[in-house]
Image (cartoon, rainbow, N blue to C red; front, side):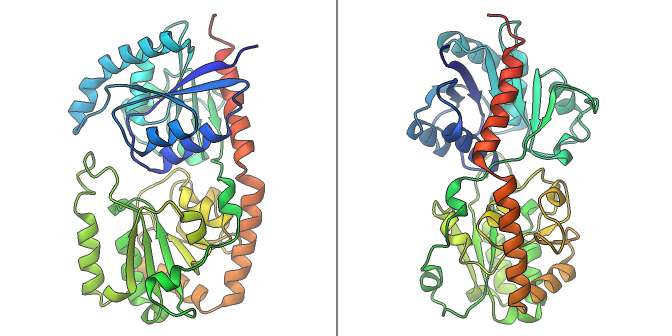
Length: 377
């Protein structure tokens, strides 16, 4: 039987968690059974990576710089998706972003169905209504599935945990402390992800300033202002954080590294990874990747985080936005090597069992099979 074409679609071309998940799926999907295509606007890191992985990329005019612009692009994007699907013979649209999901739902026909991979926790009534019209919905956590106005027994809803690329399970890299200009004994607290107020960078800086051991540790900030063009809250936030670090007398000990392609090797060189999100997230990749790399993780107990972190077993949970609780957790972990090691080892064991990229890909393929089985040839 020939491989089934699947048309993946995204209105985002920059790197974020959802885009990393999609690239990982491109790398792991069974090409004997499925031929992936990607429809997205313009150029960017995602389509470049897709081409490197042997995925055909098709230009799709979708999205915009404002909510109104995004909404106005949807009818034409839906027509574009139907046209691309006809050309490549796809019967399944796989939406990987919110705007792409709206367009894919509009593009549905009896012979073309929409599978929507929802990577966020949403309380949007419009989104819930649109998601109810998808042929299937995938979320990486139970928290992401709540509030979608889909019955608990709805057979269209699937919870599939994200996979983590094999490279994160390797040993730690080397040279980070040398690059930062610090000695081998310097303790490093890291935060990974988009430079965004919702990610809690400011909470971390204030907690480090308050922590007893904050006087000696250094903070490593990995991530860029991706999506600044479409999210006004992000533009200029990096400068705000740099100013805050100076105001807290942390300036020389806070290192902003930007986006890094060698993240897997960097994580293992950090003593503690902090995920201090202040808004609900479905399944932060930073947690799963840090656990796979064998790091002690401190994270906000919000959204689907508790589905990834068992408190004081595979990590340490703190109330979101609670600077004192976060400072205390940082103090406890930096001051107790045995505790850090225990949490890191348990986290790595948890990741090994739960975050296999192959298991993730096979689960996604099974959902694709179920949708395709309902589409007439």
